[in-house]
Length: 410
Image (tube, rainbow, N blue to C red; front, side):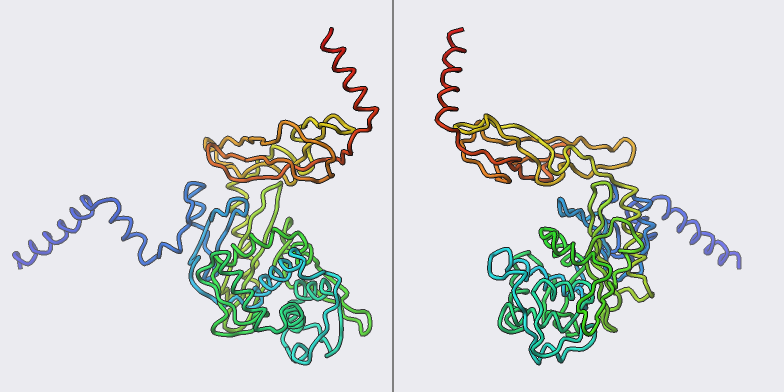
């Protein structure tokens, strides 16, 4: 018995000594259990305790700074999940690319095919042969998540849904998406229609290039047709519940769960959040709000210039005006930490030509501003002319020459 007692005591002492001398990194691994690296916040420098306490129901989630593309928080960011109707954000992106390239116009008519009419689920009950402008069809996709409208738009723009889906996948490849493949344009369940939280955030970041997409996806209620009356209500409750929300898209199927890709802007700071595979009712909204609440406590936007504000003036040669104002095409500034002692320095470098010759159009790009956070360039903003400058008349040129001559003599 005495030998057994000594043996037990020796084992206990050995375990205690192991805990004392075990390296700190290995002790941490015991505490972390089976938590994967993907389930931990990426940027622990901005409040690691708060980030660690940010528990989401979502299977996959991402919080992104769209200005730089930086990931501020993630959970299983590159795992593949079904996007459901979030698919339609890429549908709108491809459509707007075609509009921007002159391959389509928002006011052109889109006719509904029998195939498009046949799609159920979320729909606006299009009838075969019924025609609406492209923009109105895109609003139906954005607000009501209309599957029939999505197919009608795809067939109209590419000749068939299959051809349009090929364009969606080509766009995904262009954006460098490694965990995305589209099998349709609407998001109804298909094993080969998948994406990741990170990839969807990249799509959303690209969608911000088109203000029209934010305009459409932020519509709360829309009258699609008056006869028979069809009023569409947006399923994105973030538009009602969370001030600053102005996009993008919900998604749900039994296989996918509840999904949401959204964007919020507060006091100049815009962020993107994606949550996927949520099983709790309204959990895709509450998870997204948790991400935004945490983020806006960590960071703010340091603004240097407002959109449209004069940043510099440029001399004009041979013009009716002798100089032209260069204004910011977008707000100029950067995300900075709110945490005391971690504030970054934000500065702007202006690049403009020494002189411009008339004629000059209003809104013409004449330079750019590079925004730096500390020593890292985080954004480039175009500088545009604030006014039109036509060529000077002969009389104006003569007066300027004489004034220059007398100035030199004096």
